[in-house]
Length: 448
Image 1 (tube, rainbow, N blue to C red):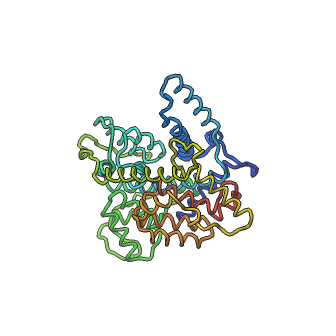
Image 2 (image 1 turned 90 degrees about the horizontal axis):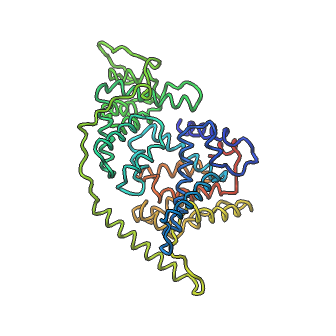
Image 3 (image 1 turned 180 degrees about the horizontal axis):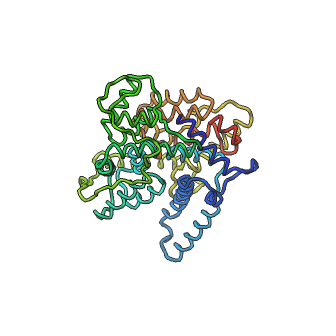
């Protein structure tokens, strides 16, 4: 069901965006005028902001000139405003980012605790509360999370928060949100998920996959309800449950498919009479929420020092390779999503255009990207990394590869939004969709 929903969601947005098969690029300004979900618009907007940040870092890191002079800063801001207004996405890049945006929305809908934590702390264990505010703009459901988090930051005058503190905070927020009426709030959450799926599928949805319910309850620490769903998974062959079955199970402990006697069954309210959690937001009392003191873990400091040493060694290696008569750039950071990805896309495009087989990923994933993936994602186990890439090399479509990547990341506890995970995923994607090789909307959905 999840794949069907993702495909339909992506296809619906594509049909609104790509109205002419001759379109080779999709301007950001054009995307912002369309009738598509705000969360999708914001995702693309923030992607361009990241591009601009990378461009700015390239020259502001140079100490030869003072880029903080007010006159210079004003001109730089004008340049970046103009660049953003004219930013475009190739059709291949648009497809890639659209899939990523839709997956983010779906993940947040089912598992908001895990998704928010991973997305916020993708590159650091400590972030500013301003970064949290900015990141929350990606999400347009479960407003009570955003309101409670913002109110708590203001109440406690927080300027920074660690990952452990954030996990503790969002756990306490839901503990408060579900405290007054645990059952009713849970049913409202289930209704919210069903309403979202109804919007995507353009038909009423009042059933959910058991696996989806299990993930949703476990993420919110609804332990007693999680155990009931676990019984459904272990003791029955049911793959989906209707809203009525879910309500009976939560109210009276009646496991669908198992005959159990209940002396006085609780009256069922039903799907139509339950409000979703957006219409009836839970109250969250913040006054007695206390977080432990933020502290930078020793292993985080050691990791930062080790990373600095690695980058220094890599820069030294690169300098050796530069001919004497050429001046080496002062600083050059490898951005997979930009320079490396573009070079790889050009190469793979030539391979595909000449009817060559898909390129070997071992040839595409080299240098720093490979070293980072092995170290950060596979805990320095090169054999397991090679086995993972070998399994991907056997696949013929991105849809298959994407499923394998998602499963591998989930099983290893890898944050899919970390820069190393994104870099690796980007290169794998280019094997199937190089930037100047476009698959039509209808055909692409079948292959995604």
